[in-house]
Length: 266
Ligand code: BT5
Image: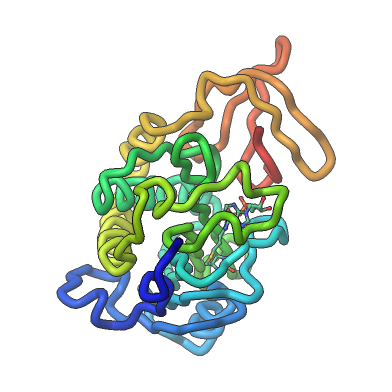
């Protein structure tokens, strides 16, 4: 049974002492919003500073990739960050992996709970989904105006509040730990790892981060089924390339699939 306190909204006290370069210089806390990604987009469109973070205790219209739903009851951690990287649009394809690695490290550091990552944007505990990343980009042609990184983590929100069909594939960190958890500490560590990885990304350390991601990845080396909008690929996942796309051997063919093309991987 999760206590009332463990489900209360976070506030600025929870990130006291956070020292980051870009991400987290401004953090807005909310009790309930539609979607933190939508709020972050409004901030970006009205000229908001790079690194601005929106955190909410609950979302009524949380979204996943391809228009899927992200169920967001009280006690989870839901946040979005505004970025304005001075890079071409095609260079952004590694961000879902780089940020799922940041989540994985933040969870292990904060709670000593073992996590793994699943291509392209999931974080797992005991093989069940505990968190996901949604990257949304705006710009003209190859030019990037802003990128919103949205992150949802099941912390103190009970899994039995999730819809029936996803319950058995999902887990919350409080269930894994066997007690309510301090989300403020997780938020601080997450923003610190996100900031570190963002600097790494901008300074050309993407390949090292992808290597670290691969070390934590439970998808590589497995037989997978990847559902795309108009096709399904079945085969052996051999690895990822430098863009973060997955290479799958189907029969004699080697197929390269990007995270944008993938709806579901099983
Ligand atoms: C994701 O999409 O995993 C990205 C989730 C990003 C959510 C954050 S919350 C803050 C920010 N604001 C938003 O509105 N969104 C972002 P995808 O890989 O498409 O996974 C979606 C699928 O995950 C759904 O179709 C369900 O099967 C499953 N799912 C939904 N809610 C879940 C939950 N709370 N825990 C585990 N699985 C869930």
